[in-house]
Image (tube, rainbow, N blue to C red; front, top):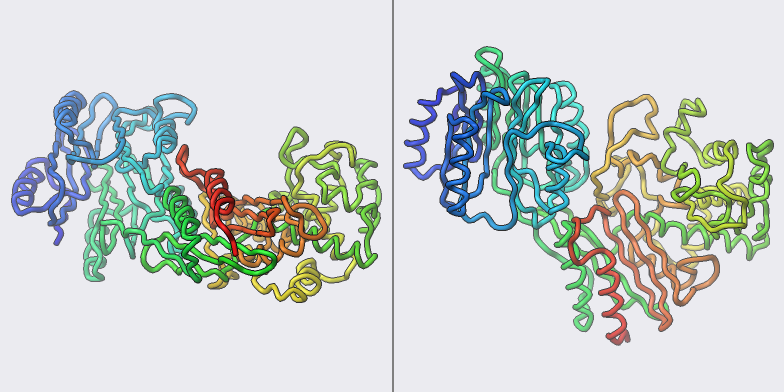
Length: 615
């Protein structure tokens, strides 16, 4: 049961308030807009029980502050806020509820400005995020030269991911919308607009979240007639408005609205698949605690001893309808991809097709380097991170594996790069240090070693891995993790990350895409030796029983390798007691300052393995 109206006067809104509240309705959306001297209201009401609540409208700044002070002293917290007018002549409306759990923050009259400047709307959003709060309701008012905001942030215990976009024109808001709804999460349906406020001059302040209300439709830039037509259409389809905000005066008024089948969030559910191991149930509990603290939807944990699988479990903490994670699912591995490259190179050493001192660039046929030292880089130096490249440290800080679009554009290729394109580009740059003289982590060194594998064998890198390493050991759950979403299959975990960037595959496009689909600058099919391989945790455990987790050679007790890239956090460990274990996690977005952290998870799992007999 819901009631909705728009374009009503203050008096009409008060009459509606009296009637609907008496019938057990409560507001889920409230907007004041137009001329402060003749403000108009839009509201949506639902008939349901809930916490005690109060509301105010038609007050100026002083009146709102008085109302705020009075009711917050009684334990009420603002949940809906709205404002119209200039900074010095604004009208406010709000709804407060009693008994809100957790921390909260509310402000009005907030200016726009750089995130680093204390007290700006952008800075307060950052502060709220860092204090594990999320933007609940917002209004944008003022003038173009003196933009103001009214906002309330609530506790975010489940670490719902959210983004605020303070001020967009209709066109730029559409670009924001197009980018946000691509971000992967619940069933690949993207982040949803949870709140879209409109100023008198038709600027949009929007909030996008990765929580779930089921099917939804969003529209903006609507006249009153447009909104009514859309309302009728969506109501007939079984949806109702859960957020309606107006901006402008008279016939110049424009509306933004979000329609959904429900306004109450879908709750996440916990599940685990794979054969339970009762005496290792503490491992399940550790994974559950971590995933729920950080809003992680999918993960795996696997353990083997002396080459025999002892534990292979997959975990899902997600809304109903999210595909349940399976132990055989492939996750993006990030830098745990590198252990396959090291084993492939070692196999070429063993077959005498390569030597550790083979010089890389001459082997590839490159001549006339920008830095003569480049011709002295050996294969083993690449594996040891001593090839002269410092991707992220005190050197150039340039990591070509995450700059494949830039490289293609700089080289005027007119197409996506290959491994050899990236290698040639780097051959034209000065090294960060003399090869063999320093150890600096380098993703590119592994991509370059992958190009060497392809040159020596005449096959694609992953074909070499599959035929020479995986198939002989009956390891099946390893593959190149496709860059594009439409290339991914149902047995590949949804990689979730908040980042956006430009495509390294579609060089003509200026449309932002999610980092996990190439917006991070990397093409997985090119960077498969360094970051782009996918596998299950079980497959990683099988592999490190035979090959070093870190370094090239056979199983290396006491070695470990971790990986982190947009949409992936992984770890593989070989212990001295014959136990190999690994986890895969489908994100690297963590709640700030929350325990258990990723390090805490690793320590907890290690402690359990230290104190439990693995038979």
